[in-house]
Amino acid sequence: MLQPGMRRIILACALLGLTALPAHVTLAQPVQSFIVKLKMAATPILETPQALQQREQQRALGVARDMGSTQPSPEPVGTRAHLIRLDAAVHGAGLSQALKRLRQHPDVEWAEPNVRLKRMAVPNDPGFSAQWHLQAPASFASGLNMPLAWDKTTGASTATVAVLDTGVSFSHPDLAGRLHAGYDFVSEVAYSNDGSGRDTDPTDPGDWVNSTDLKSPLYSGCLIEDSSWHGTFIAGQIVASANNSQGVAGINWNAKVLPVRVSGKCGALLSDILDAMRWSAGLSVTGVPANPNPAKIINLSFGGDTACTKSYQDTIDEIGRAGALLVVAAGNNSGALARPADCSGVLAVGAVQADGAKTYYSDFGSNVALVAPGGDSSPQTLRLYSTSNSGTQGPLTDNYDYKIGTSFSAPLAAAVASLMLSVDGTLTPAQLIAKMKASARPFASSGAYPQCSTGVTVACNCTTSTCGVGMLDENAAAALVATPVSSVPSTTATTATTSSSGGGGGANGLWAGLGLWALALLALWSSRQRPAIK
Ligand SMILES: [Ca+2]
Ligand SMILES: [Ca+2]
Image (cartoon, rainbow, N blue to C red):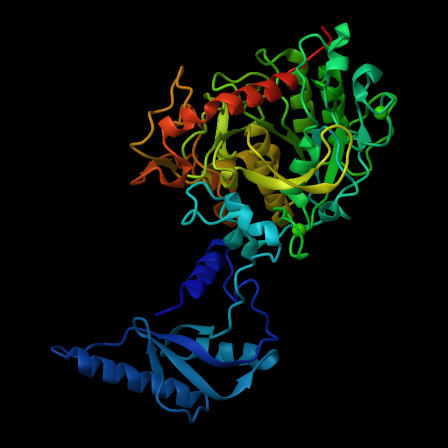
């Protein structure tokens, strides 16, 4: 039998249209044996299976002898394949030559070098074990399947992702070297919390709101809250240094985040968001220096409370023409989508919990493209884990923290899109959306949950009219990159049934733990809904 890893690599090669060596098997690796499948031979009538096996063995031995081998008889591998050993290992040109001779042998259907496979690319970051959402679906139904995906690509430095958010902590050790300079688009000094309007420093000074702030009429409608470190968390999800024996692993190991600060205290102004979107995509913005690192992927985890408006749609269309994809969070109100998630041309991402059910908080609707992990309310270990800071007001110690929300589902899709662009930098926003949708996994479904529909505000089983086509799967997405869009299926929507709700807790359990979390989330989301100066 072929090892599962070998089968996987052969399959990957088939998907990528490769016929020679698997992608990461180099000619430098010494090889002393080959897996060789024999062509069908004429079978005498009434030959016993034992006689057939013996005859095939003799044919395989003949091939080995023709290769100059004096080794014992070849061992069977699977059906009609044999392991043929040479007398000495070959590599480089010798390996190419041996393969060529084997493949030209009249009895041989195919031949592969019997190479050592690298273990799957699992990073050594100690926090990786807490990043359940990156694991294979066999462990967590909604896992992104990253260990398999990282075998295909760990990203390229060319695939910049803009994060329009609260700014970032440039001092965070897991983000060192992973951030472009970026820009601060927060124009109103009254909210900016850095003592200035727009400038070249997108450092997050904190976005806390306290009782003193609320005394000002400018903060009408805002809520008291600690600093969120929202942008730092998202940047880490996408590009935190992987394999550095520290903290967490980002999804793209080589790209950089372009930090674009749009939010000070109590949310982001619509005008700042729109200018930041244009600048991120490389378009000009009056009064702002040109962006030296245009991004083809822009993550926006801020939402409005109205339907898509012309200003938003025009800007999305404009950045789309510039080749940039806007990835947006569905929203956290358990209801209908609002802008920008309901605008056309965006990749709107809803949130599922670890067992694959739609989270109680995720907004839903027909414009959701797909779903990705957003974290369960409890236990804490099933929330998402990424880079943060310990300060409740200004920054204190760079650290790691748990969060939940569709704000953190969108960056997972943005990061996956950046990995796809790392493989093929010519993909357009529409092609990226088509391939991510086509590679999505079927929704999980469990008897523990009701079906998602309008008015259902507990965890629920996704449907194609509420949660898009399926669950984001990076391994499948990476495999589809090389497939022409014309042959990419339009959807994969089906539903897999699971036997139980697993560790995520049933609907009743979620309701029991809902109270404060729902309030906190609604407060957080409300604070991100400041679409314009009132
Ligand atoms: Ca400023
Ligand atoms: Ca790390």
